[in-house]
Image (cartoon, rainbow, N blue to C red; front, side):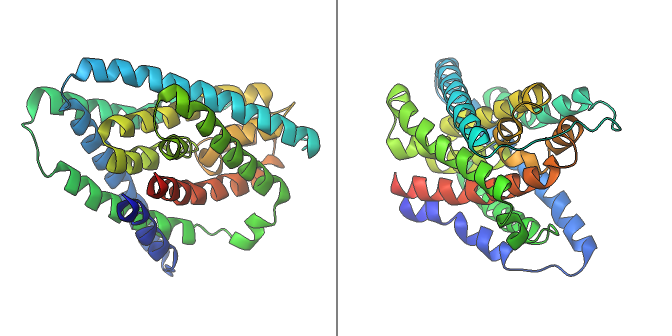
Amino acid sequence: MVTSALLILVPLFLGFAVPLRRRHRLTVVHHTVNVLVYLVLGLLGVGLGQLEGLAQQLAAMAVQVSTLVIGLLLVNLAALWLWHRWQPLQVEADLVSGPASYRRLFLAALKPLLAVIVGVLAGWLVLPQLTLIEDVATGCLMALLFLIGLQLRNAGLSLRRLLVNRQGLGIALTVAGSSVLAGALIAPILQIPLFHSLALSSGFGWYSLSGIVIGDALGPTWGGVAFLNDVFREIVALALIPMIIRKSPAMAIGYGGATSMDFTLPVIRRSGGLECVPVAIASGFVLSFLTPVMMGLFLSLG
């Protein structure tokens, strides 16, 4: 377990070490990442669909996902509220921008879920037992992490400038620390080892990575739990951000987790104004970097 869990960090850091000087190569990387994400999520679904006693497994997953979502929501928001009280960030709504296209955003959030559902149905109804599916998924995961490292290195963001953004860094560390606390509190409820619970709590909304990493280490059932937990974080964030960002921008930006630098950024910008953008990008980038590091560390310790 230690070796396999820590292996996820090797391709990530290898990718992060490679600069891409031609912009079109980054475009190719972006499209390849999208293909690999949907492929591995489909394989995760196939693994779920071929589990014995699928109905009972899904019922148990519903309870586990609900526990994680609610526990992380309460602890993250409480910690972010305290951060906001200590280091308040004042924002003004951007009145020039139009309303965010919530229908488009919600539909985009549901696409990865659809990939898993298609995989579940294929594994349950159509495909025979595939003995090599785990090895194929692991190989795809390694390639995906290498490409994600490339994306992070070549995103056009200065790591130094992001890390000196006190609000963004503080929000990210508050989310990370409170998620560890939530994971520790949830472990006895889920009746799983502490470090497994901490790994499940360290996805920060990056469902396309957390489901794959957890599924590779702990099996398709827990991979599905991790995936759904982070999908719901993103969906809840889309609903929460416009409601709370004016009164507590730290709560709105922080609960979006890793998605604050990309998927939920348009909603943050339109609801909170331009001053929220660098904070959200810094927070999202730090959490994106911490996700595989913390998951790999906790899985290796578990």
